[in-house]
Length: 348
Image 1 (tube, rainbow, N blue to C red):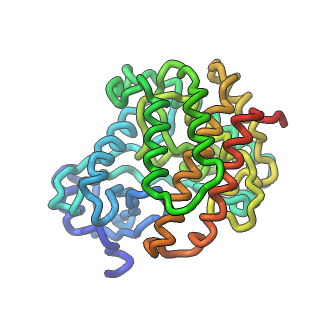
Image 2 (cartoon, helix red, strand yellow):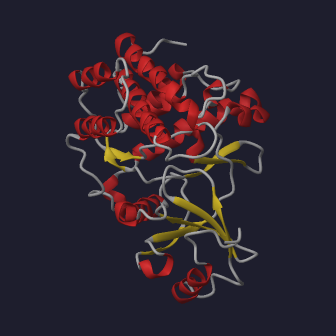
Image 3 (tube, rainbow, N blue to C red):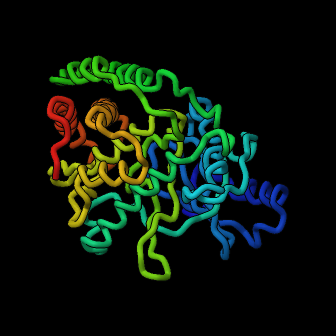
């Protein structure tokens, strides 16, 4: 299949659907390409030669397990468009599997860069990097300030018992990929369960909030701003401090050369974890005194995710560079989680 007709994207059927549902939107034959990245769902850039859009669909061969994600992603992005949270404008949701073989949705294309590594941030320089990461915090505050009921998301999740369910969920994920001894991971899981905090009022939670899940671009005045928050497939109603804990975790340098995990925290100018926490607290007014638990939980969650990738690698089910190093990272994440839970987060 040619690059302009990537697997999972039938451009003729897509064009016919858009002409029928949004007449006048498309003004020429469509071309498309797969956009790399994202956790599991497939993302394509589509163009008629003048305008550009983005199509999101479940992975090939896994329609039933993730079909519901399309409706949820489309719903949350549509709901947030009228708020201060920058999200792409949605064009349509299609749940007719005859078109692309799975449910999908179309949204506007937003220009911007998702920064994943310190090397990618380096050209910005220390000051612009610092401002970009602080903008990431400010946008998270804006997201958590949204009243779910006012934007039609009152039933978007089940906030009661959210943290307990999260712990059980990731514990089951760990059990599903156990094929080696991992010192300390059961201790970390048990300690998190014993010290479960009381959640604040629920909010719309992104679930995977980090620098490479947003698009950053310069404004006309030269300042960098967040143009769009992407990858809403894990979003729900729940404890907003889980988003902050994950952001703080990604703000702690791993010091691992050639890490397959985001290395943006190692870029010159990147704010310290304490600065991220303080900015969120000052702007949101939330009590963040228990953030060490949420950060330790983020270390545990990522350790489980990485162990799952390592497990699939040992079975020969993953291809590409970097997978051979992921197994070595898992004990590092477990160690950080245990240290964070025992000692809290150091200032600085």
